Image (cartoon, rainbow, N blue to C red; front, side, top):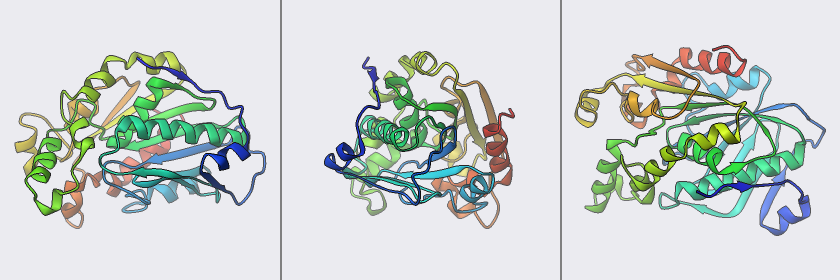
Length: 290
């Protein structure tokens, strides 16, 4: 299993040569500042769901964090609330981009963040496939930042049966699923990626012994969940056992993640983002309250 030790010894000039664009409203010393990075899930780009519903992004900003939203479809971008932007233009992410490649780019982004701001603290809140990206990164890269807390939200650590549905509907040409690609294969239960991630999960604790890892799951149990996840509580996309199926220090299962106005979005896995209880739990957990 590959383990890469990255040391932040390169300068800003090298970043430009490599095709990395950096902008910032201020390059003031922010040692020990906490950056919260929100990692989107499968097929979600731009600001994703973080500004929808109860607006988790703004609540974190109001709590005093520098908050960045990560997008990896198209160029790899993290836009931060303090005006700093990390963008790697040479990255062209699609549904065929392996999770491993996205994780490697995430690692590079954190190295460059440490070059800009020195000794910083990083919290990561990752939704769905974003949690797989994050955990693969933590398994394989030792990074020059203090990663205090990682929260995964509805992450399919044991895969999701709906990945099979998406993949094969795409193969037979159903328009809504035509973009199904390699990521669908990796998200399938018992895929090589899922098996390898779980086999080496002990690397996370050896690489980051002081990091607190927290897993969120939901048991909304919509009607299609009874078909896709027979006998298992689920959030509509991921079963509770799958979301809790990776090493973690604490876990939370949120019930009844829906409202009449938002039911139509539940199939997209966004129910967590409409629930203030989820937002409150994130804020508490990042403050060290479990």
